[in-house]
Length: 114
Length: 111
Image (cartoon, rainbow over all chains, first blue to last red; front, side, top):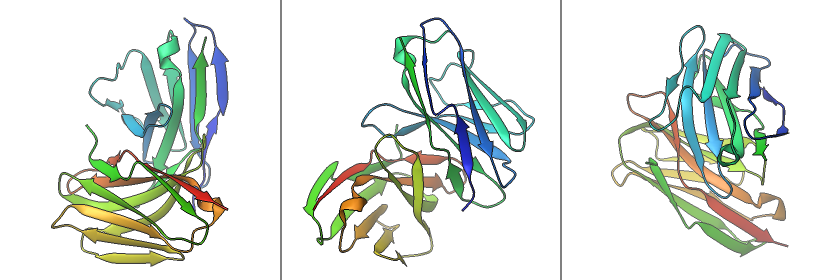
């Protein structure tokens, strides 16, 4: 199947700093990318949907100014957690979809905010 | 709110036994998908079943879909210790493009 990578795989940062997470589709062009957040022992919650070249669509309750999403190319989307706080600590997972229905998931990024 | 709800939330079985988990959803769907997630890792796509399909097989996996009851089941036959993971159903609504995940079932297969 298609491969989606995320970088970094884990990050520890101090409260108040910003963290950028990259999501890349390695062998296909992703017209749509999705960002999810997953707390321990819970399910994935969709944060936002991004289409290449346009603004992301955020789910209800997700602050767009806090979670900045950029989808500048068909193979790269970035999520920036601005002014991170301990409650933002979570597992962030991206997925990418090409021409078909199937979404391919990245391996996730574990963010720990001290 | 989550589109899919799964039960049981957790399941513990012996190696060789079958594992069955169920997923219910609320609105009409285009398709339903099952994923596996090992602890702290990304998701692995297992199987996709379309709304006009009733049953699908892939290796030791069997998925059923009952659109009249808005429910699906995943059966893992002859389970192995390596099947230990969390399993999630996810749906795409009939007129949508977003995957919505159920709460997941944590499966422990004891050797």
